[in-house]
Length: 422
Image 1: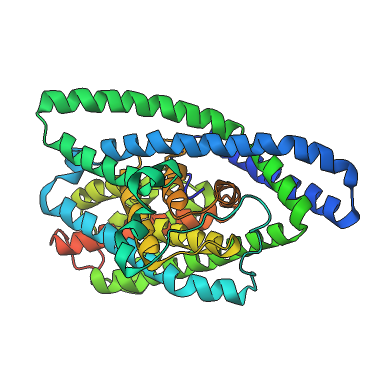
Image 2: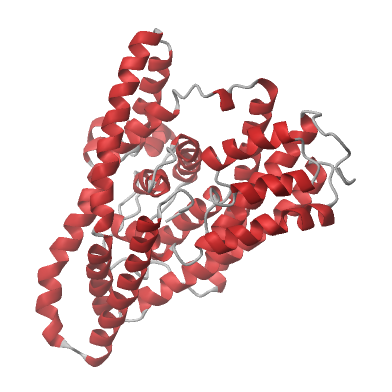
């Protein structure tokens, strides 16, 4: 799971049960593999279709949900997003931070995977299987990006054409009159609500589905799968810590602010973030930190709620690290065109996904599926994502305050110089 800031306690509790199920499934499966518990073979074979059916249901739900999310997200006319230069600068800062995080993951994730000793294709014969990429070549570069001709590509499970059509439809809706546009969006909103109810039902069964998948994987691969995902968590934590540290000098330069003053000013909000694992719960503390840094109340009151609602600074680091790791362990070839399309999708869906429980889960799933990652691998990565969740929230809170400080400087809205006490 990429971020649980807006999720209610019930969903967080289910996440912990899912993590417990993952550990139990791997534990029993590895024990069966180690000590030759052949009596488990028949129950595992009987349960395996249930786990795969659950994965297939999640995959099918991703199609209509991503269409609705994009249509809604690209037709938002929120005052927060259209308040002149402040909104434009804030959106620009959000994109820059996401690009920096993405560059960090692209540069460091591959050598980290090699350094941690994760063997390529180690899970290729375990849970799920790799999806063969489209044939590359200069003469079919467009089909390489789209995953093949549109008809067979969509039938084969590629989401990229659906995403492109959804974006085009969302932009077409924007051109309609207010009455027609409102009618369409109300229908889309109702459908989205129903889809999220279905998603909630499926995620409520996540402990069962994850247990079956990890049990099957543990039996077939022994300690290999559990060790691989432990390395994934370690890699992700390292990259999140590095991004968090990188935001300090970035803010110092872009906001004209003393790095020490910035670090001291945001520390209370970071403490709340670590304790609650929720950027939404950290919002009051972030507003107080903004006041300590001399950021005008009008700027903080505009940018921070906007950032908490639509901006997740960790999204490109976690999304790119995840696709690179899963592609490595499932032996999926990622062409430069596929990886570029994936990164653009992650950024777009990051802003378009609604502030709804589990919205973050679906923000990366369609992009991962489009890149050829097996649904089984996506589910297991989602389950272990609960472990580095505190680091994701820290990055999000630091990113929100960094963006606010930068916007304050570039809108010339400070009541006092950045390096001085207010």
